[in-house]
Image (cartoon, rainbow, N blue to C red; front, side, top):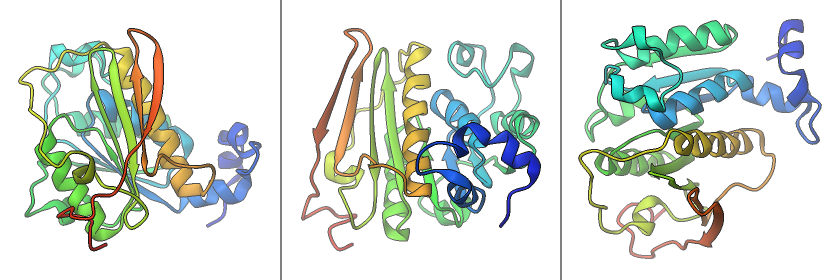
Length: 245
């Protein structure tokens, strides 16, 4: 798929990056990414993916915007309160980059519908706020051999890793027991913005083949102390999800 003159101009600053070029941009244009959850993480990651020129974005969320969302979900505005996030996101991202095909899916992901809701994509980006759905997506991605860029945030803290089926551990390897859910997650606005930006870097690297993704590694950010650490994570040979992949 060729690039138009408008696309060459729109993406010119990244096309001139070492290792990117028009070939890398065509790879993005030919790619489809799903963003599951378009809240704190997903509203930022979907914006950056659209700006970068990923050809198709599947936005999945069933929530309506609340006033308490607006300290961190900066894709939206006060007048959007009470509307479905995916519908607002599609409108805003289409205005940002009409070259990108955007599909808004207003559904909750379950074990029974995950394959239909996510569909055929090249990568999935985690914007979820609960572990039950996150593990459902993890399991689907591993089974379907789709890279899954996970991130989780709370207060000033965040974590990120890339699940690459058959090449590294999945989330069930790292968290064999489902973490305890919090009813209301305390969060500073800058935390999901930082982690979502890193998620997009990971996604773009996977789609273009540039760089070294966080496979078998988890990166931790402590914004309060302003420290960043990376830890190796290993595959659980008895993992119920990925041990036979």
